[in-house]
Image (cartoon, rainbow, N blue to C red; front, side, top):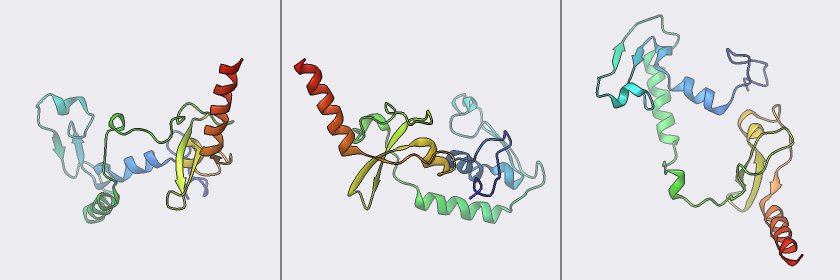
Length: 154
């Protein structure tokens, strides 16, 4: 909706799911300063406790709303499993590229009845970013196996 209404990020880029997710998890919008307490921050591994300053600047959302959003996101979050231990159902994800230059990723539709490769940019940012059509997984797998078979025969 942000992209459709013409809003852009502070760097002039289109909004993506990751950017919105980071904003929804950032306590800075509640006026809190947190340094060294977020996963992935180098200080978290040093053993030094994180620095937290409440009311470091004016809040643009109240703590109650922020907490409600966190609870709702936690309830909707899927179980997290490291990708290296899960065999991929979409072997060509990241190897196929869309005409816009972005990688194609695997997606399912109709309660996992149909499987497609879609443009990652179009999936994350909407049809305005890329309106390429989805490619049925079966047709790509079939094309790939026919290509492999024809190379071995020649």
